[in-house]
Length: 144
Image 1 (tube, rainbow, N blue to C red):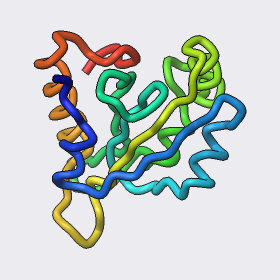
Image 2 (cartoon, helix red, strand yellow):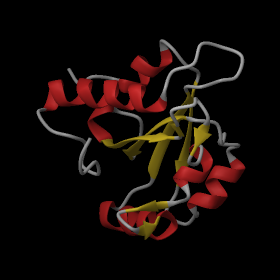
Image 3 (cartoon, rainbow, N blue to C red):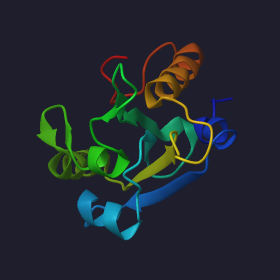
């Protein structure tokens, strides 16, 4: 049985998701689905949220030594770059290759009013769970 990282995230955080269809841009989907620009983690799936369709585990946001936030939050990260290609282009290429929509799940790990978890920690925990189960990283993750 495949590890369900949505269930794992749901034990600590509110998980939201949205579908990116082949005829829609990531910027439009992020805007229309009110994706937060807070710090957190996200998962990308082919077709649907089935664990076997997981393509990528990612994080958005970094904290410096003084505890200050740096880098972009989830919404900006989803619209930035992947493999040095703008994600608008990258996601369109991948959806054409896969001949399917992508589904994104995301969770804020550093809410201002609750217990906060570093995005890198939660990303690493999910990578570890995936690695133990599969002996490799998700298809689009090149390294940890």
